[in-house]
Each structure stands twice: as C-alpha cells, then as structure tokens.
Image 1 (tube, helix red, strand yellow):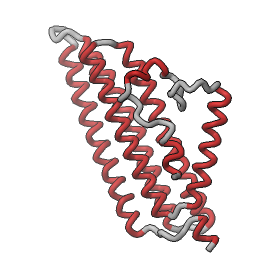
Image 2 (tube, rainbow, N blue to C red):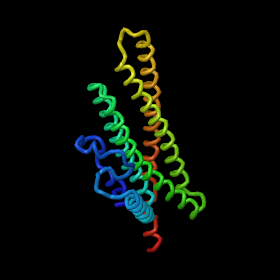
Image 3 (cartoon, helix red, strand yellow):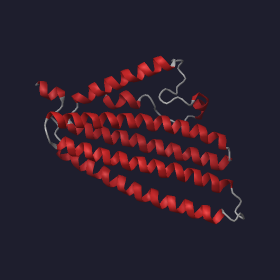
Image 4 (cartoon, helix red, strand yellow):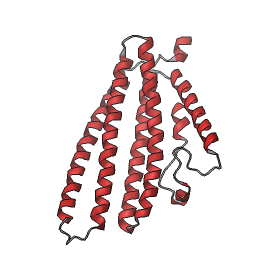
Length: 220
C-alpha cells in the first residue's frame, strides 16, 4: 500500500502519447483540473500517508519496497530511451522537450519514494542506536548516488546522439561525435554495473532483514 501511494501518481509516463499535450507539471500530469495550490496540498497529503504507512512496515518490507521503486525507475528509463528513439527517427527536436518533461516528472516520483524510505531507515537507526537499519540506509544512499550519475550520463548521451543525428556524416566533427557517444556509453555501462551490484546487496539483505519490526510489531 505504501508503495502505491506515490507510484499511483504516475503509471506509465511516455507510453500514452495522447497525454503529451498535458505535460510539464512535476507531479500531476493527468490534466485533472487541480490548481497549483490544491495539487501541492494533495501531494503533501500523499507524502504524509506514505511516511505513516512506512512506519508500519518491517525492515524486510521496506527493502522490498525499495526494489519495487527501482523497477519503476527502470521502466521510466525505458520510456525515456523510447522517447529519444522517436526523436531520432522523426528528427522532431521539439518533441524531446516533451520527453524530458515526462521523464523528469516520473523520476521525481521515484526520488520522493526513495527519500521516504531513507528517512524511515534513518529514523529507526536513531531509535535503536546502531543496527542493521544504518547499513540499509547507507546502501540506499549508495544506490541513489549511482542513480544520479546514471541520469547525468543518460542525459548527456541523449544530447550527443541528437547532435550526431542532426550532423552530416561528411562533417569533420562527425567522427568526434561518434567517439563522444562511445565514451558516454562506456561510462553508462560501468555505472549500471555498479547499480546492479548495489541492488544485489539489497537483495541479500532482504533474506536476513527482520520481518517482525516496524510500528505495528512494536504495539504487539
């Protein structure tokens, strides 16, 4: 339930192209008529509910929720890359602004989830002195830092591919652009490998993580 609170705000960012005219909002892109004030209030309410729900989850459930959020992030990257491919095929550069707005909104939702997970893990560490929650929080921060690097590499790679696509292959800079694309692809691949290593560590932690802690367990 906690995961659904925020993920439901963004189901499939780029797949439905009929919604592209309603883009640009960071959280609510559905065009439901909310004003900026009510939209902000609504999202803050969702954040409060998410934090409340997370307090009832066990550490194992929290780690599983992190992996669920990561799957949503991976899906967003696929949509982001599909958007780039559409731009390259049509050479419609204005569409890329739309693609970026959609991706930014979706990534923002995932980041909000991850911050909430990290906040809950750090709070548990404060309450129980040093325990496994601190290790979990460090793992999550490592994942987040790597994801920030991945997004930087991906955005740079997209721009280089667009430049290359717009360039005549006879141009003297064409070869340099190809080399730049290759370098960025190499850096991105290395970053993804490190992300996968971090995810494997989280998966290993799930096996040993407590399944009977959390606020609900403390009441019993």
